[in-house]
Amino acid sequence: MFNLLMNRYIAKNVSVDLSYNKMVFIGGPRQVGKTTLALTFLANKLSLKKTNLAGLEEHEAYLTWDKRELRKKILNNELPEHHGIIIFDEIHKFRKWRNLLKGIYDTRKHSLQIIVTGSAKLDYYRRGGDSLLGRYHHYRLHPLSLPELAQFETNRRKTLELLMHFSGFPEPFFRQDETYLRRWRLERRKKLALEDLRDLEQVREISLIELLIELLPSRVGSPLSIQNLAQDLESTHPTVKNWIEIMDRLYISFRISPFGFPKIRAVKKEQKLYLWDWSEIEDQGSRFENLVASHLIKFCHFVEDTQGFLMDLRYLRDTDGREIDFVVLKNKKPLFAVECKLGDTKRSKNLKYFKERTTIPKFYQVHMSQSSDYGDATIGGRILPFEKFCEIENLV
Image (cartoon, rainbow, N blue to C red; front, side):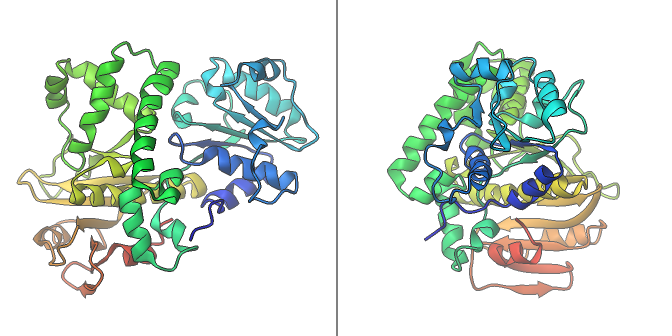
């Protein structure tokens, strides 16, 4: 049904950056496909077919910090150059990784293409006295999305239903097996809590972190109350606030802030939280909203990482409770707003209200229904199926 080793949506951009002697950093959630993507570039260098990546994780050009026997080679700069490419995986777990990479790059940038991958937020751990500035470009690899899969599958409705149920992570999506999904989800959660958290953060209350991860799906789409979470966990507000920030750094969740337009009494502080794995959310309406949020943040990150525009995803809510789920901003100016309705194709009255009071140029209401698709001049936009919206706004 699908090409299991498809070129991911950032592959062409990565290839261009490598050709200009830039290091490429690829961050993203655990099991999103970073290693597979990196290995396709190694396969190209070795003139192997992309359908034959088996065994490349044992290749000498693939060096992971998680293997003790490879750490000595990395630290001693014992790198094979004859393949023309080197892949460093999870090297940011080494405290002095920036200076190590700087030395390798400065002496070998004309003979080696360098890819760095990591499951924790490389865009976070590379900050602070960045000695690598100007030597690399950074990409955030997202789960599979409807537009990315549409190039291989013409039945977008079926693809969207599969994404809703199995998430956009490659393994459970391609397996499409309910039992496998449950087992994969449980194992991933354990690895995030016990391995990534242990390696990258100094947190003692691991059991409470695991409980927090279990509580997050029920908070999706609503204004996030740190105080309520702190009460549920019998902890303090500062502690839980720090834990939520850790969840973001480990690609478990992401948050969006309100869009405070000056002519309305907009809320300005309450954030909304979403999950990278939306399949954990039981409520179908919240799951659909999370899927849309994931597609939009993927679009924002892609434009920012490849074109250098400042992109942001916000939501719009006033003090009277009127709300629109998402507003996409480019260089701090709104491009369009999106309201999510699982099955309701009747226009939300909030769209017209905010159209009359903001400078947002386009408003959409997206839904999972197949039949209802119509323009609405009063909002300067359309009420339409989500898959058609993806085409109109060129999501990735």
